[in-house]
Length: 204
Picture 1 (cartoon, rainbow, N blue to C red):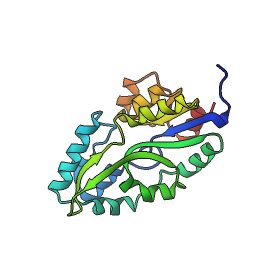
Picture 2 (cartoon, rainbow, N blue to C red):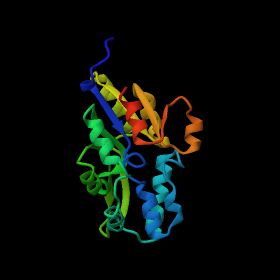
Picture 3 (cartoon, rainbow, N blue to C red):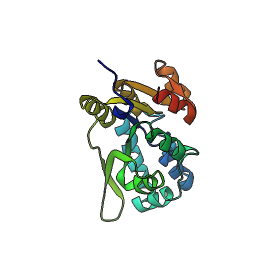
C-alpha cells in the first residue's frame, strides 16, 4: 500500500506529561495530600486510581472548583507551544487524554485550542465530584483504530501506562520522557526525551 502523504498523517498526543504538567501532582502540591501524587505513570488500573482520588477528595472536602483553581495556575511545559505549532505545520494533531473537560478548558486555551477527546465529571449539589464518566473504555486506543479505519496514518506519543495501547495501535508510537519502569517494561517503543527528539520520531 502506498504510504499516505503528510497531509494524511494524524499525530495523537497525550496531554498531561507531554504538553502540560500532571494535574494531580499539582493538586497534591497545593493541598499537601501526598496520595494525590499517584498518576497513570504509577498505577496502570485507571478505575482503581480514580476511585481512590475521589475518595480522598471527599475525605478532605475538596470540591471541583478547588481543583479548577489549581488548574488555572498551570502553564504548558516549556517549549510545548512551539513544539505543537511546528507539529501542526507537518501533520494534523488530536489530543487523546484521560483528563476531563471540566479540567481542560483553561489549558486548551493556552495551547491554542487543539482538538481534545477526553472524559467528563459528575458533581453533586455541594460541588463535590461524585463520579467520572469515560467516553468509552480504552478510548485512546479506540480513537487511534477509528482514525486508521478512515485511512489516516496515525503516529502517537504518550508517557504513561494508559498510553500503551494507544501506542501499540498506532502506525508509529513513541514514549515521551517516560519513567524508567515504563521504559524498561515496554522496550520496543522508541523514546524521546525532549521535543526536538519527539518531533523527529513523529515526523520522519
